[in-house]
Image (cartoon, rainbow, N blue to C red):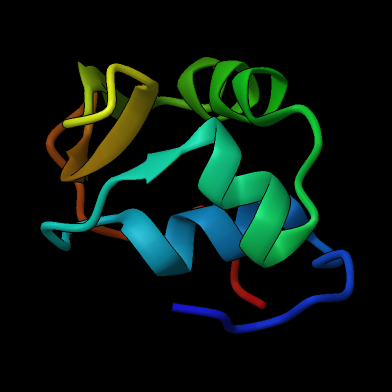
Length: 83
């Protein structure tokens, strides 16, 4: 899936929209190649600090991948980033 070869602006908002409450996972190589997100682990850390429940997985190629729950740590489904 190639969405955007240019760097995504508003990376935290993009990641929340793209992953939250879906069954999608995103690995570091996918983030770099498809969306231009160079430091996915830093963005994931920021999302966790803002209260999102992020699960860390290993995909079929052994790379670290992330999935975001539809509910945050307080049980809310409200979006954090409204862009």
